Length: 206
Length: 206
Image (cartoon, rainbow over all chains, first blue to last red; front, side):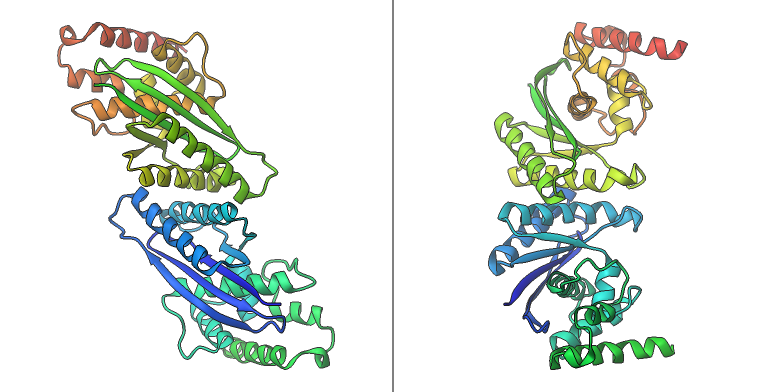
């Protein structure tokens, strides 16, 4: 059973859209990744039209089973938060219009899911996304990597039996909750756990 | 030359939509007024779909020459601001997709335009809207009256030769700037000035 998830990192200047497929063994595979851009000096309504059409074109092309969008907080950067909120509204409506289930995930939920650490920085998230998807390079820009991380996070949270993970808890502890003994891990799950450990080690030393 | 303006007071629970026509003599006429609602316990994406479809249906029915949307600030009520921003994004895109010119106006610009006072309360705005449109009752809920006020504000600001009025300046001073001597006022303009004065008087006493 493979789940195809389209993640959206909403933004007016750069909107990341990443599509992954996650098999029952939890190993994610890259399907496609995009950055939709609009000119900062264009009128707001034109920018929203461009980004909205771009999101819808990708949803219609890749027909995901689910969509995941980054949850925007009013407390974030006040200068950009309104545009980000408006784009997230367009993405949410695009999902609803097509009957595609959609969920919001906070940045710390996403970071915790892919790096095991809710306060990971963008570099760690990018590196982990590249490793998990078996890519030679980190997807650029960060918005693209974040959209892929969102999609992976959503697939894992949705597939997990104990899926209602509180924000900020580590994906490792969630993984072990669903597979109580180390011996029950599949090879892919062990690879993931080891990859996650090796990613976290430098941070713990630093 | 009559300008038909559709104003949107964005909201997830109640989204006000008001359509007015303003003739060259600046007298506004009510065309139609609506409140689009979505259930507070419905999923966010469904609410956005309902409100978005509702706005688009009214735009397509009434085919305005211009649209005006209330500018949302991140500093406002944090609990509702994200939904409000998302709805404003849907309205802005609806305008862009149809090639309808659209503008954002701040609440104080709207209040100043219809009451002459940028800090007027909702009751004053509603009463002035009713008076300007010759209605027996104040449009309810406040979101509907606000949407009409937005549409009137936009038509006046757009028609005025010195249209780049700073927020908070009074519509009376703007009116006199475009018609330097009282003798140059049309009967409708005099009626408006008198109505505005009578509305402002109680506040000055209070």
